Length: 460
Ligand SMILES: [Zn+2]
Image 1 (tube, rainbow, N blue to C red):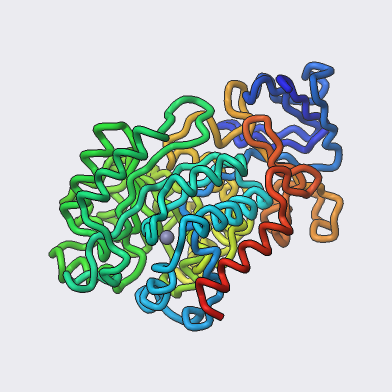
Image 2 (image 1 turned 90 degrees about the horizontal axis):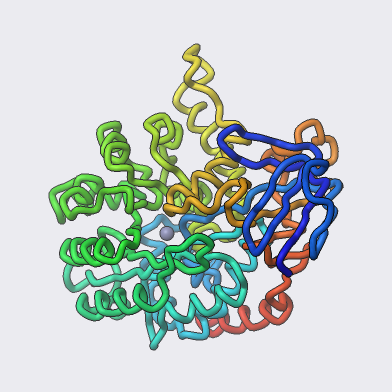
């Protein structure tokens, strides 16, 4: 099918003018948007025509931080009520049993969940490779599901015996990490418009890799023009670790290892001061905000309004499914809006007459999940519905109980009301979800296979 016409949807483009069309649509040719606007101004027919009367249509959501494999270890009893370091120490030995099949299956599960929540591009951070697992297992699964993937080749090299947090058994030698990083860049990285697979280099965190590996990873990434990603300033424990081990706060440590630039984005970045926010702004570093995970692990509340005021690109991440414990990106949009409001409340919004202290709106939260995420990943071809961009979008039938009474403003309804499943999710003009069902994955079979793998891994 070379052309696809979508018509009669309530369409929000998320373009710079925030254009919205109550009776709008898209004309798509070979995976790219050729026209967007009122239905009456679009071509009248195409190879496939879809009437989305009664549906809202939005740009596909962009997930900027995840660990797909953790869908196998959701709600593990011993890790339910722990902060980050204790949670990690409980789960590392379980993750050490992961196999290549587990990586494949968990990728299918996470991406299926994401697609059903409106996500069309996801970044995943895979940082342990036990029992012969490879990034290739994840890439192969993602291509089958049909969601765009920014596969972060993660790594851990600083084990307990050298003062790191993870057990030595889940770390690798730095030579092996760098060689495999270069291999996957050369094999898979596609920087072109409409790319389905991009590679990112992503040493896991300050407390699990050495400064040398950070520096060498940055050099390698820049030689090949791929982006860099890591966890940063997630908790106060990490801040103490960095001060003691490296003599810097986390952001200062990143500057010391040459990890600032418009090719770098950090997950979480909760514990930063204004000076460090200015460092991000000056060097155009991006931030992946993961509100549910930050609440789940009692980590803290990231200063998102301060980041946005400083002009920093902010995207959303569901984070790993052992600290969320879901992969519902539209739900994360809602969490981002609500958590930002809570922070304003805690810091005295209700007492303030400062006009700049506004509550985050539904549309601002949606921008984090769309254009914000695309900017963080360095993509100009996704994030909004505009001519020349990828035909990545999702649609939800508005005629449902969850939205009853909220039709005064359908765009806000999908953020304020209880998050639901997408009825249609399309990536590059191809359906991944159609009429509420996954097209590329057999859901019931996947659930069985996934639960069997989780049972073997967790041992209960
Ligand atoms: Zn994470």
